[in-house]
Each structure stands twice: as structure tokens, then as C-alpha cells.
Length: 266
Image 1 (cartoon, rainbow, N blue to C red):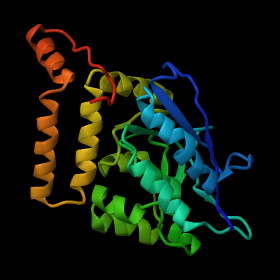
Image 2 (tube, helix red, strand yellow):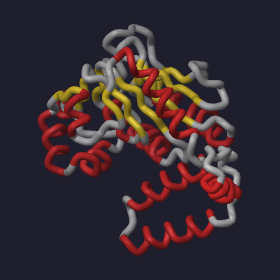
Image 3 (cartoon, rainbow, N blue to C red):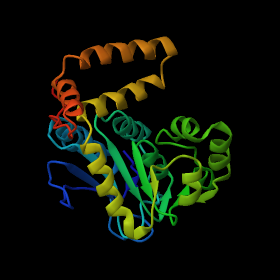
């Protein structure tokens, strides 16, 4: 089976966090890096067999899609005699979208093609003004993949999504921020600091509440009002008997920061 090469390298690293808190996926850029990337099917196998399953079952809390060498990714490497298994590409996007825990994208420089849609599946995007976001598919005779035709219109609206995808127009990080795509727009030197700040902020919340809210929003995009309301009711009823609620209430009364379990255990 012919495959597209994604310059994606998976490994656990430590930054200012312990390995138990954050797992990184470093996204290597085609334009500035000559290393041969791993194939999409290996990317998927890593998600299915190891990284995502281990990540979701472990005490590790956050998945970070991280830039490398001042770029995020120019997407798939279009080389001679290479085709994508679109089933694999679709499966990869589905697994990212359905990831139970928070996903954070840290973006700088080129972010094109499949990579541009990859970051849209994350929960928080931190980017620089120098970010170059390009839905480049039409320029290459292709159509949009990695779920971009579904997710982008839901974020920026149908007309703007058509503009970016049908004209393959490049926009920078400031424009992404104006469109409401980003969590934070920061200078290149502040990317890691802003990631630290976000993780610290999330750590102050009930982790299971964060993950359940993420799931509610994801399901709400595919349901009507009544179904979404029913889902909220069921989830809230389950929270009333959880230890995190007792801790949250006690912390409020005692005027202190809550000490949550920070696990997905019920």
C-alpha cells in the first residue's frame, strides 16, 4: 500500500513538567528538516497501540502537539509514487478528535495541509504572529482532508472556511487569532511560558470535570438541543456524588484552593 509520509515523531520528553503530566508529539517540518518521517500507518499504530491508549489509561494529563525548529509542519510530503491511505488519515483525525484528555497545539512557522487541520482538532492552540496557516490542498490538486471540511466551518463559519480552502490563501497567527481560532497569540520566545501557564491553570480545575466538559462539547456538535441538555443532566447528576465536588465545595467554604484527585476515576 502506498503511503504519505508525515514528518511526525512520537516520544516522551520532560520539559518543566514531570513525565506523568504531559506527553509531547513533536511535529517535524518537511521544508526545514531532511529526516525521513514515519508513515501515516505508523502514526496511527502509535496512537492505537501505544501512545494514545497508554496516555488515556495513565496518570498523564495533557497531550501536546509541539512545533520543532521554528515550524509546525508543512503537512504531507508529496513525493513520487506516494499516495495516502485515506482510511488511515481519517482514522488519525478521529482518534485526535475523540481523545478523552486535553490536547494542546503549540504552533509557529509553517502549518499547512493536514497539519493545519490537525491543530484544529486540539482543545487549545497557542501560536505566534509568524505562524503561516495554509489550507493548501486546492493548490496541489487535492481536496481537504484530516476532517478540515468538518471542523473549520464550525470554528470560523462557512464563508470564511470556503475562502481559506478554495483559494488556498495563507493567513498568519494574528489573523487566526482574529478569527477566534487561538487560545493565545504570543511571541515566539513566550510559547513555552504560555504552555506552562495554561497547564498550571488547568491543574487548578477538577481534571475529570475538564474531560467531561470536553466530551459534552464534542457530542453537542453532533446532537440537537434536547439531546445535549439530556447529556448535561446525566453528567451533572453523576458529579454530585463524586469526591471532587465535595472537595470543591469544601475549598470554597474554607477559602482555599481545592486539592482534586486529578484522575479520570469515577
